[in-house]
Figure 1 (cartoon, rainbow, N blue to C red):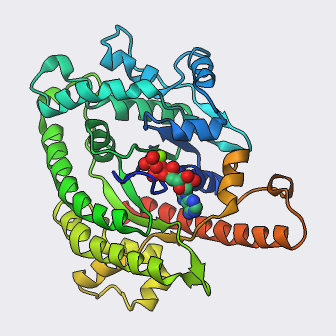
Figure 2 (figure 1 turned 180 degrees about the vertical axis):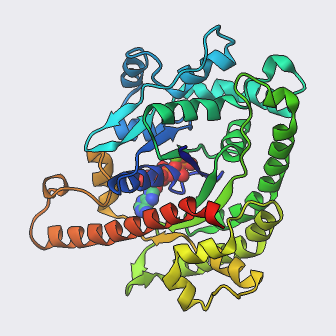
Length: 370
Ligand SMILES: Nc1ncnc2c1ncn2[C@@H]1O[C@H](COP(=O)(O)OP(=O)(O)OP(=O)(O)O)[C@@H](O)[C@H]1O
Ligand SMILES: [Mg+2]
C-alpha cells in the first residue's frame, strides 16, 4: 500500500510545493513510484509541473481525458453523483517516468464548506457520511492504478477542513519552514491545532456512520517525520548569522512546543527510528538507545534536512519543469566559471535531496519492525 505523506504548514510560502516536486523526483530517481497530489486550489504545483501560464491551459486539460483532476475525482461524493469514485488519469512528467501528478483544481475550494459541515457533525448526518473518507479513497484508488509507493500531498496554506482531513488521513507529515519570524510563530499555532485535529480524527474513526460509509473514514495515525528548513543565505559554508538565529528559534519552538504535543497524541514514530534514519547526527549529538526521552525530543526537533537559498537554480527549475538538482548544461545555459559554480551548487543540493529521500525511505519503511 502506498504511503501517504502530507507536506503541511498553514504558513504560506515556506516551500511546500517546491519540496513536493523536488523530493518526489528524488524518490522517483531512487526507483520509488510516486504520485504528487495538488490539494491547493491555487494549483501552483499543477501549473509548475505542466508549465501552465494561464487559466486556458487548465481548462483544456480538465476537459480532455476522463477524470483528470482532484475535483472531478471527488465529485461523485460531493455532488452525490450516482457513480463511484474512480482513479484519476494522472499527468505524466517529462523526464521522470516514475512520478505522476494528480492535478489540482481551483474549484476544490468549493468543497471546503460541505466537508467542514460533514466533519463538524462527525458522522451524525448520514447524507454527508461519504465526504470525510472520500479524499483518502480517491488517492488510494489512484495510487493502486499507478502502483505507487508514495503519495506526496501538497497542501494549501490554511487551517481549513480540507487540510484537517488531509493531515489526519495521511500516514506521515513533514513541516516545511523558512528561517524567519513567521515560521517561528507557526510552531505555536501548530502546537495548538494538531491535538485538536488528532482528537477529531480519533472520534471520526470510532463513528459507525463514517466507518460504514461507501468511502470509509480511514484508520490512520499520522506520524511526524520532521521539519525541513530552507531558503537562507550562506556565509563561510554556514547559515548567515541572522538566519542561524531563526533556525535556532524554530528548533526550540519545535522541541518545546510541538514535540511534547505530538508525543501526547501518539503522532511520533518510535524514538529509535529517528536515530536510525540519521545515524551520523545521532553520534554527533550523543543520542543512543539508552538516551532518555528528552534527548530524543531535542534530536527529533533537528530538521530532516536544511537547504540554503537555491538562488538561480529555482528560476531555472521552474522554467524547465525540472528539479533544482538535475538540470542539464543546456538548461542551465551558462558557460565557463559561472556554469562550473552553478553545477557545484546543483551537486550539493543533489546530495542533500538524496539524503532527505533516504531518510524518508528509512523512516517510512521500518516502523513495523519496532
Ligand atoms: N530553498 C529555496 N531557495 C530559494 N527559493 C525558494 C526555496 N524554496 C522555495 N523557494 C521559493 O519560495 C517561494 C515559495 O515556495 P513554495 O511555493 O514552494 O511555498 P509554499 O509553501 O508551497 O507556498 P503556498 O503556501 O503559497 O502554497 C517560491 O517562489 C519558491 O520558488
Ligand atoms: Mg504551495
